[in-house]
Length: 396
Ligand code: NAP
Image 1 (cartoon, protein in one colour):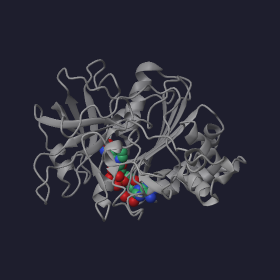
Image 2 (cartoon, rainbow, N blue to C red):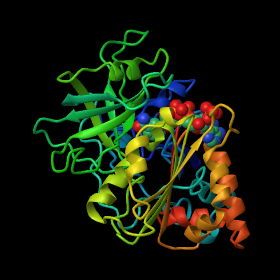
Image 3 (tube, rainbow, N blue to C red):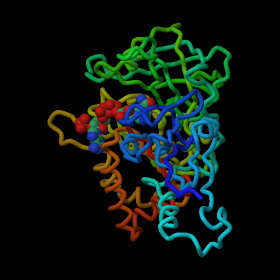
C-alpha cells in the first residue's frame, strides 16, 4: 500500500475559471484546459499561496488518497470525487485499524476555508462552462452607457451584449468571461476576465436574452479599458457561464439581504430585476446595503431610487461626501440592526455579499454583533446558513 497523502484539488462545479490561482502559484503546479483548472500532484507542495486569492473557495479542496488523481482524471471531472475510505476498506483490514493521523487528515479534508458554498435549495439549475477559451461564444455589443456622472472620477459602464441567436443560458448571480484581444507581456493570448451579469435570465430587455455587465474602468486595466471603449456592433469573445452557488432562490417567500460595494452591485441588480418581473412588489422581500464613494459614483443610483420600498429597501451609503463622515455598508447595517436581526431570525433569509474583499471583515463583525445581540452565535448561524445555501460571498 502507498503511504496516504493529502492531495490538493479544485472543485470544477464551483470554479469560475478566472485562473488567478494559476497566475499565483509560484511553482507552476496549476494548469488548465478548455474544461477544468487542475493541480499537478507531482509539482504541488501545498504551499497554500493559491488559497486566499481564489474568489469562490473552489481551490480549497483536499482528498486523502493512496494514489493521487492524475491530470487526465482531473481534466475529465464535472464534479469532485467523494472522499474514499482509506486504510480499512482498501487494505482488507477492519475500520478500527484506521491510523488516527489519517482520520485527522480526513476530517481536515472536509473543512475548507469558510466551508463549501452551496446553491439555494430552490435555485434553478445553472448551465456552466458551455463556452470555453478554445470555443468562445461570439457576442455583439448592443450598448455601452456610462452609469456614473460625466465629471465623476469613477467611470462605470453598463455594457449590453447580444448573442445573435446563439444559446447563452445565464442565471442571475452567474459570471461570464470576456477575452480581451491580443497577447499579454509574455506573448500569450489574453485569458478571459470575469464579470457578473447584471441582467436577469430572460434578458436585459425582457425575453430578448441579451446580457448586461457593470464594468469599472481601471487604470492600465487591459480588459476594463477594452470593454469600456467598446462601440455598438463590436464583436466580443465570451466564455462561460460560470458559477453554481451564488444564485437566486426561486422560492417567492425567500427574503434577501444584499450587501455590496461599487460594481459588486451587478448581481444584486440582476436579482432585483428578476424579482420585479416574477414576484412583484412583495412586501419585505429584499433589503440592500450599497456602498460607493458618492452618489455620482454609485452605479444605477437613479433607477434604484425609483424602486418602491415594498420591493426593495435600499440603504445607499457614501464614504467620501465632502463635509460628511466616512460611512461604510457595515456602519449602516449596525444602525439598522433591528431590521437585520429580524432577517437573521428568519429561516427564509438569504445573505449575499459582493464587492471589495476588504469589506468582508467589517460586514462579518457587524453580523457577529447583531446576531449576538439576539443571543445567536454568528459563526454557527453563518455555517448553518452556508450549508443550507443561504449565505453567499463573492469578493475580489
Ligand atoms: P470602490 O469604488 O473602490 O469602493 C466602493 C465603496 O466601498 C467605496 O465607498 C469604498 O470606500 C468602500 N470601501 C472600501 N473599503 C471598504 C471596506 N473595508 N469596507 C466597506 N467598504 C469599503 O469599489 P469598486 O472599485 O467598484 O470595486 C468593487 C469590487 O467588486 C471590485 O473588487 C470588483 O472586482 C468586485 N466585483 C465586481 C463585479 C463586476 O461584475 N464588475 C462583480 C463582483 C465583484 P473608500 O474608497 O472611500 O474607502
